[in-house]
Length: 121
View 1 (cartoon, rainbow, N blue to C red):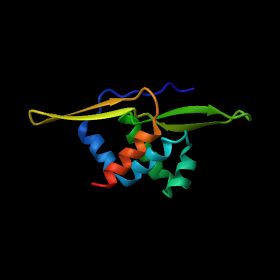
View 2: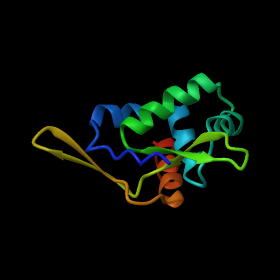
View 3: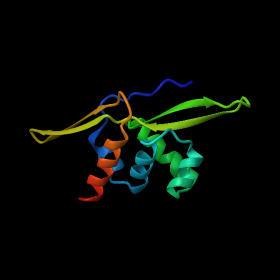
């Protein structure tokens, strides 16, 4: 099993760009309900595998999604991805944005609320 990657506080620019991306938001929302493989995400979110993997890499780099390896009964293995957001805080102090991310457990209500909020802007 792969250890979960925990990002240090991500760059505000990276987080804002990801949250502004329809594909990244769809992947984040989908993985907030249950761990999913890239193939499942491709099918459920109606996007190509290459798009799924590119966005998952970016989401992992920011600590918003974590991958772990599952071993099947037949000995094969597959990576599954799961949203890792408990809290995302954005502060503006003296003209500088600061993004703080808490990733201790997955909360699907938060990810859904974030998607709803972002789409409502």
